Amino acid sequence: MRTVFYYRGGEMIITDQALVRLGNGVARYSIRHIGKIGMVRRLRCGRASSGEIAALAALITAGLVVGSVLQKPLFPAASAVLAAILAFRRLRVPKMELWAEYRGSVAVLFSTTDPRVFGQVSRALMRAVESCRLRRDGASAEHPAAGSR
Image (cartoon, rainbow, N blue to C red; front, side, top):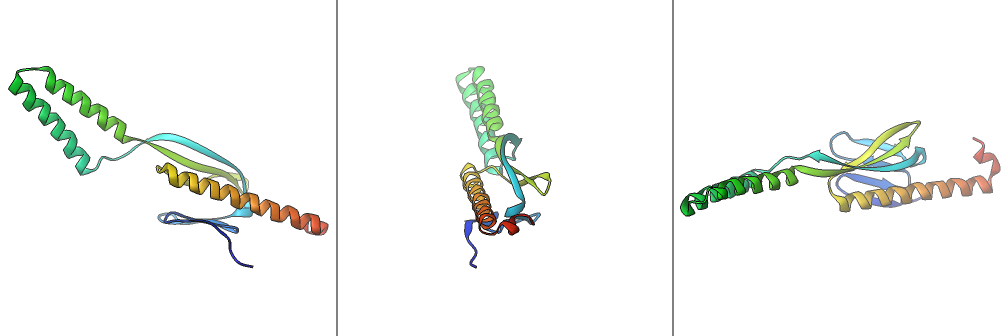
């Protein structure tokens, strides 16, 4: 029997048999033991890169220079407020998590800040679970004794 791949990426592999989380904290979850699947979206604090910090510092410096040249005291304050707004928006990154019942308890199977990858992984997992259930139900209908194990 050949393995069917539903998703294969740098962070996750989903087949007809298992979901394997790669990277730090490698984990393997058997598809047949995955129950209800839920999705959670929450805000989390991110980290600013050195380039982003430099850009915010340049914005504040430009406000100070323009304000002193034009003798307008509101320029520095406005540039500082704008920099704070931009920094806050950047540092509050939405994090999406894929939760599921697994062997009687709730587990976080996957989390990311990339909505495209999250959509691909969650759809692949749902297809894998549905395929597993259809195979199991089909086997139970063909062989009634197999369903009672």
